Structure formats: C-alpha cells, structure tokens
Image (cartoon, rainbow, N blue to C red; front, side):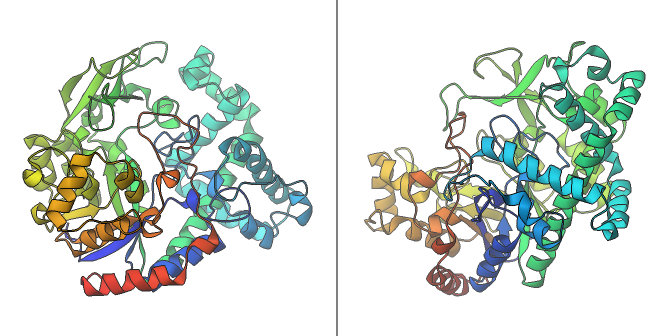
Length: 501
C-alpha cells in the first residue's frame, strides 16, 4: 500500500471537549474535523473505538467489533427526541479537562437506558426499520456481544470465566434460557450499538466531504473479558475453567525494565488456520466499516509473540513463539482484497518482522522521540535522514510523553544529541513545534502529530503511561477555547510548505 504525501493529527474522541464529561461524536467532533480541514490535514487518527471496561484502556475492550457507548452524543439524541430535557435534570458537575470514567459508567448508562426506553415506548418509530436492518447486518458479532453484555450485567459485572458453568461454557440450553430471560437487556444493548454506529457513520461522512479520512487502530490481541474470547473460546489458549494458560506481553523494553504483562489471551493459530483465518477476515471487514486506514498495534506479534505462562507477576519469564502472520494476511487479502494497513513495528523488531511487513508493502512507523538516545546515536533508525518514504513518522504516540514533556524530562545525553543533530538549542516553548516541523519535513509519506504537541502541552496532557493503570491514563481532554485558529494557520503553512496538503 502506498500513501500519498500527507499529514494528520492524533486525537482520541474521548479527548474532545463538550458538556457531558467526555468527548462525543457530535458538534465538537465536527468542529474538530473542520479545524483539520482548515489546517490542511488529510487524516484524523484515533485509538480503538471499542467499549472499555476495567482500567478504561481502549486497548482492552469488551468487543473487537462493537463501539464505545460513552462516545454517543447525547445532544444529538436530545435533538432527535430520544432524550427529553427532563432526562438531563440533576446532571453531575463534570470536569471539563478530565474524563471521570466511573461517573460516565453510572450517569451515561442511565441516559442511554432512558433513550432506549423512549424508543421502546414508541417514540421515533421511524427508526425501527433502520434498527432492524442494523441488527440483521451486524448479527455475526452483535448477537454474541449483546448476550455477553446482558450476562455480565446479570452477574454484577463479573468476567465470563467467573459465571456458572452453563453460560461460561456456552451450553445450548443455558444460552437459550438466558436469551429468553434477558431479552429486554439484549435488545437495549443492540439499540445502543445502533446509536453509536449511526453517529459514527454520519461523522465519517462529514469528514469525508471535507477531505479528511480516519486512521483507526486495532489491537492485535483481544481482551480476556470480551465477547470475542467468550464466543470463540476454542481459538484461544484456555483451560476447562476458562482460565488462560498463557497470556500476552512484551519483554523488557524502553518503557519497562520488567516488560509489560498485558494479560490478553493468546490465539491458537493452528485452530484459526483450519477455517482459513475466518475470524481475522471478519475482524478486518468490521474495521473497514469504521476506518479508512487501519493501524495494527503490535504488528510484530504476527511474526512472533511474547508468551508468558499464566499466572505471572511480570513479563520477564516469557518466550518468543512464531506466528503464521504471512498465511493469515494472505488469507485476508484473498477474502477482502488489498488491505490499507499501517504496521506498528516499534519495539523488538527482528528480520522476520521486517520481511512480513515488506512482503505486503506495508508502511511501518517511526517516532522522533526515540531518535536521540544512546551514545552513538548517528546509527539510530529513527533519525530523520534514515527514514523511508513508505513509513509513518510521529513526533510521539499515545504511549509517549508529550514532546514538551519529553524535552523537560529527557536525559542530558539525549538533549545533547538533539542539539548536535539539529545545530539548535530549543527551549521548552519551542521544542514541540521544532519536532513537528522535523516530522513534516522528513521523507515518510505520512506524518502524524498528537494534538497535545501542536498545543505545546506538557506532561499533564500525556494520554497513557504504559504498564500502569494510573488515574491519569486515558483521561486528558482539551477545552474548546484551546483549539485556536492560529494553530490551524501555522499548521497549514507548514503542511503546504512540506508538500503534504
């Protein structure tokens, strides 16, 4: 896949401003798209859009196919008559700069339940046909997901491997009884997914009309407590009790001396191969309904993955296990055609990962914050002069500190290397823009900059610290007044000058 020379901005929708405590897919999302267009940007990159659970990470979702109900725009539901003014009485006082996911779980769930109740009692009857069509079109994943979420609710939120054996093991009689007993909840879950996809599709169309495409993000692994793992148990390494026997992680790296123990169940690739990797084809098919380009997080896991015995306290005592990524991608291509994929190839990258990436012509990634470490940094692959055209360059990602924060906390050797390389001595005020300029001036066809860097924000605006579940992770939001017109003017000038419009 070849991407034309262009640029974009990384911002997860939860970080958008708005009155209801979290970013949504309504007015403020459209304002952001307008701003991107004014700034000459071709892409809006988001993180995974799935429904989040414990820890609030978009990389640990209850489904690889479903959308996050927290993102449904309540103002739009009010305009459409699915919510009434009285439904908003007693609304909590939200922090405009941070997401309180616990508060969202309680209050927003109540609001969405009210929207469904109004629909179920006959309001907006013209939506029935569209809702029915959505149920039929998405049944392959929606039926299992809705039943899974209804059962979680009935079990007080417990993970599926803590349910009674009948529902845990998907015995036919137990599932039939659950579908009958939980029918109202199942229908409500489906309707809320209908609202999410309806709003997301409208937003994507709005963006498309303004020349903005969406780069989505799919984690290579699914969450342990997910409808995917529960409904496709035979395709993962689970024991008879539904406990994983091995889990995913990465060995010690830049982010952690003990590695990262993600805890995701690992695929039984031999089982997946028997049906031609059908689950993967459906996963990519579903992602193409959401995104124009797909970034695969931890792409190297398609060549080999870090397997950690379960249970474990850290990821140190793991091993590399080969994966049939070549056969899988070939099967997906046969089913769906050429795939618009970006390979997140950061971390421990070996020749087999590079070959897999290059055999399919996939652009890899480079992060400029990683370019200046070490003594002999001149051989660093991420230095601008070492970058390739078929690559996506970032100043930093959601897992990095903001560029201003990075400069504030960088080792003196890194700062020295940067000064040597650039013949400059930037201040905290100028560093983020200088790194942005380096990204857009560099050779890769696509350059992406987090909005925090364009706003020159410090570590307080960091999105995630890998390997932690701290209260600041995933919670940052910008204020509407922060998206100033001069930022768009400056970014457009740089984008035009570097041939990326």
